[in-house]
Length: 231
Image 1 (cartoon, rainbow, N blue to C red):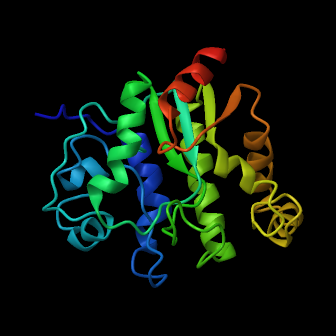
Image 2 (image 1 turned 90 degrees about the horizontal axis):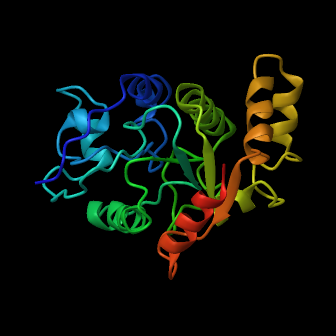
């Protein structure tokens, strides 16, 4: 039987505050986040009883879950290691969405310390989501505000960027590129300057490393080596 992880109530509040209202508001691009083990009940996703439509969007409740110890996006405690990916895909098979990530963390001996999250919080096409498709500046603002709130709760000791996520900061057409019009507008707006500052600080986090995608050969070894190399 999969061990049940108790969600961190502060993280649950972060995701509910920033993302819950966006379900059903952006066509095919609903929000998504990583649950805690065993990912069977609404509470494992930070949801309340009766929020069935949101649960159905996040996963098929009939599918088997067997991810002992997985903390996902809402189970971690302060400190530990962040794993930042790009964007949730449109993968509708729950085991195919979660299983490879879980296997990599388990093989890297990181299950107990990892907080798994994404730069963009809304599903996108492709294996890890296209950087801009379906993403409006409002959706990016919501995503980065959520990410900043996660960081404020956890204050991670180290950050692992999936290679594709780190590359987004330098891709010319990516809206989170520091040279993009969106980031320029954030810097000019006192109400949103904090989002630009946060992204700049995250991109250049002093105790971070870039690691391979979790489906890549020997990804677990890469992740473990990177984690051990950081303070």
